[in-house]
Each structure stands twice: as C-alpha cells, then as structure tokens.
Length: 552
Image (cartoon, rainbow, N blue to C red; front, side, top):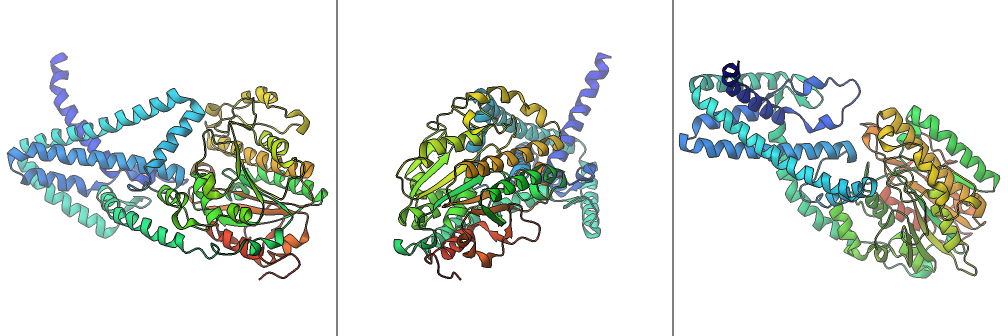
C-alpha cells in the first residue's frame, strides 16, 4: 500500500497544481458580490486563455529557460490572484475594485477597525496572516506552474496537440458568447483583462490627482465676504448630525423598513409635537460601505471625494476650499466638532474649520464600548449638551455631531434610557450582553435587523435630544454618510443616503422650497436626489440672502 501511495503522489501533485492554477485564472472577482439565484458553479466552468498561452510559452522557450519562465509566469499569476482576492474584498465592502495607486492607505484604516473592534493582537495577527498568506499564494502558484512545465516537457507531443485545440475551442466559445456566470463568459480572459485594466488605471489615477487639484482651486465661494455668507440663518444654532451608514436601502428594503420606518415616524411625531418640522430628500454619497471621512469631505467641501488620495489632497490644502464649517466660522458662528469615533488628535480639524473638538478622549464616557462605537449616541449627545450646548451666554453655534452607534458591526447595541439616567455612561454596562458580534453575523437577516435597529436608535437619540433640549432657533441637518456594505444594502443598491433639515422656523424651509424635498423624516422613492458634492453650493446659495428676502 505504501508503494502504491508513493506511486500516486506525483500524479496527485500534478493534478493539484493544475487545479490551483485553473481556479486562480478563472474565478472572477465579481464572485464577491453574488446576486440571489446566481449559479456559483458557473464561475468555475470556464476555459482560461491565459492557461493556454502559458502552455504555448512553455513549448516555445528553450529548455534552459523553461524553468525560470515557469516560475516567473506562476509568480505573476500569483500576484494577480492576490489582487483578485483584494478586489473581492473591496467589492464586498466598498462596492468597487482596488485602485493600485490610490487605495493603499485604506489598509491602515482596516487595521485600525480590527484593532478597535477585536483588539490589537487580533489586528496584528490579521496583518501577519495576510502577509504570510499572500506570499504563500504566490509561492504555491509558482510551484504549480513549475510542476506543470515538467509535465509539458515530458508530454510534449500531447501538449502540441492540446494547445491548438484549446485555442480553437476558446475562440468558438468566445464567438458564441456562452456565459454561465454573470459577466464571466466560459471563454475566460478574466486574469488577462484584470491585468490590463489595472495597468491602464495607473496613469489615469496619476492624472486624477492633477485634475482634482485644479478643480479644488476653482471655488466660487472662496472670496465671498463674511457679511454675505449664511445671512438667512443669523442668530440660529445649526447642528450637522451625521448618522453612520444610514443609507437608502434601510428605507426601501421591506424587512429593514419594517424596523426603521416606525422609528422614523415616531421620531417625526415627537418633533412635530414639540413644534419642529422636517423636510427630506436624498444625497448620492461619494462612498459606499465605508470610508465615512470621504463622504464628510464631499458634503463639506463641494468636491467629489471618492478615494483616499483626493481626501489627502483636499485636507492638505488643495485649493484652500471653503468648507461649510469654515463658512459658518467666517460668518461669526462658534464651530465645534463632536467626534466620538476619534481616539487621537484630528489634524483635519483645521481644514474643516473647527475651533474645538470633543472626541472619545474628553467626552467623559466611562461605560463599555459597543462594537466599533466607543460610546452610545445618546451619551454623545448628552455630553454635547452638558459641555457645549448649555453654556451660558454663548453665541450662535455650528456643531457637527457624528453618531456612531449605527457603525458596523451593529453588535452589541445600546438602547434609549432617560436623559437623566445617562450620567457618565457606566449605566450602559449591562447592555453589552444583548447581542455579540459572532451571533449577529450568522445570517444576512440578523445583520440587517441589527443594522436597521441601530439606525433607528441613532435617529431617535438625535431627535429626542432636540425635543428635550433644542431651542426655538435650532436647525438640524441630519444625513447618512453612506450605504451599509452590500451584504446589508444589497448587491445592486445605489449610493443614495437620506438627508433631512429640521427646524421650528417656517422661513428655514421657505429658503429650500425649490428643492422639492418632502415633508417628514422619511423620503419616498420619488424624493429628489442630489449629488453629495453639490450640497454645499446649494446650501450656501439658499441661505445667503438675509432673512425675509426671497431665495432663488
């Protein structure tokens, strides 16, 4: 038996090498975004042109070059397979592919996310595992190609017949257009096209940096005198409430809407009972599934900031853009950022124009962490009330409050309590047992339920704060920064996010009557949609004229 197993080992290794190369070549990166009903085996029933070409190369090269050629081709396929895996991850989370020039900083953000949700040892282990796994994949594919090169050399005559036959079959399948998996024809050139598209994207990404800098420098509001900015809002406190991951799918997916819509209706009823009114529409976010800071930058600057390099250019001073916060500061408002997700000094605060920033280090929270969120939104708002909003004899205030309880992984989740019970946050201790991450993520249904519940909590916390503490001069701009990941929002979901303006003053809504926004906190499918980078200009234009005059 031992001799028999030993004799089978070479064949087994050769078959394993062939399977490894085959899978690396044919599996499309779109497998990371499967639609319901997709026939998964169709992703594997394909004929890769790259494998046929590799066999032809091994037949053509001199024998002394066959080994280095095999190792080089195998390692190259390994690098492309690694890139494909990265693309699968990006498509699954951000609904786009990895940019080889611009997206490297996002790996650092990924490390931070794992560290904040699972601890530094887990983050370090994840990095080490990714590096070792990546190198192992490249080495394995180099070995596989080397192994098959020996097979080709030993069966040269068979290979010489198989290569032309393979080319003929591939051409025939390509002409017929047989497809068993979405966007992945049986005549596969997946890896070759990915390599071509990746290389072609490099000069485009470099050119984008120059074009973006030129666009940033052309700011129609940069030279507007302070006295002409935001005159229709003079004397009012303005809060920008950013609800993490609050996307359109939360309103339109039937199961999530069944959870969220009653919470929105209840919040709207409470607002109206206190004299507030709301009007709502949609913005098209510049990001999806993550990258909240990109959406913040787009909303504030009037620029389409959809990747990290643009964000770095912009916040480093490209074009010296007038952000919404700096417009308020310039016009006489005191500007405050409430950023409970920040655990370190925030260099971008000067770009945005915040005169003071409150974050996880000074908001005074002494309770447990809820997933990624360092504190419940109700505590964040309670601390804002105590430390900022209730200051005696203060002037008009512009605040941006980021609500993080609706940030992935949506477990465990806090619940609303009496405002007089919030204290230093220690009261939240028992709540961290209400839903561990591992349990929540066992099914898409559970994740969606937790997500919709978290968004309802965030909106309820903000509107409850407004009705308890908000003055008659309070104006709230509440919006979602981006849709949740495709597993929650759906593979074909848009980039749209809800936005609402809340106020007791009818004149505030008169200024935006031409926008066509709908009454209440719940915009329907016919509500107007505006690109997120267009909001700054529309808002500054609408509220530029003094109160009592008409806006166009």
